[in-house]
Image (cartoon, rainbow, N blue to C red; front, side, top):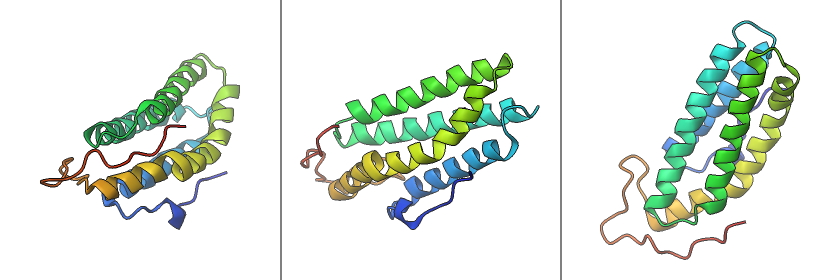
Length: 150
């Protein structure tokens, strides 16, 4: 099951939207070959590297605007931890969890976008945060009412 870009994923924040499009491309590259393929680990490493940069970017943004990072960061850490563990298992020839990850990424991403990233995008816009410079506007409000974690 490949992932498709949905208009509901577009937040009107170009840097965030582009990173999410790239995430889908990396996932689809993995799905296209499957864990048994000789090129899978190389693509999986690229996916993990991109995903770590993607999550680091969002984590920086959350910290810069005083967004409650605990639950969102924990989700990022959990996903990277699972990906790294599965990578090790696939390298040893255990393909079952590799296949399961490929099945679970699309619904996980959809849920993550609909919940955590939607709240973050709203808050970034509300505070006037510039994702290109990673700064608040002069006199910007990094203490706008943040959404609850959870």
